[in-house]
Length: 108
Image 1 (cartoon, rainbow, N blue to C red):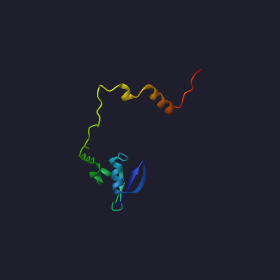
Image 2 (tube, one colour):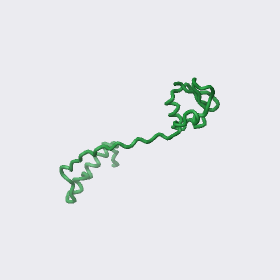
Image 3 (tube, helix red, strand yellow):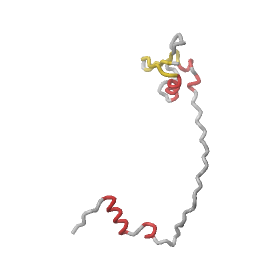
Image 4 (cartoon, one colour):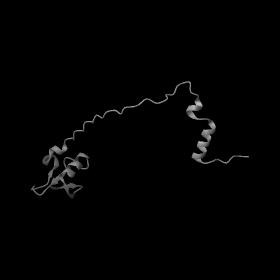
């Protein structure tokens, strides 16, 4: 069914019923907004015509999903590992940053 609604003194529409209800739920129109469709004799506030549209929609319950199985790392890090094994040595880092940001000109 096609509905019409009043906004700022101007007739808007036609819109489908679910579109009009969605506008109400999103706050684009209020409960006192005048609405009309062909079966009605006069414009009436939406709160009188369709009070159910004013009720907040129930939030969907979250769907429980199983957690993914996580495998342990093949070689866990231990405190005995050298810092250079984990972070790389300074020369390797400098090469990385040079490639990332471009080679800087060296001063003579």
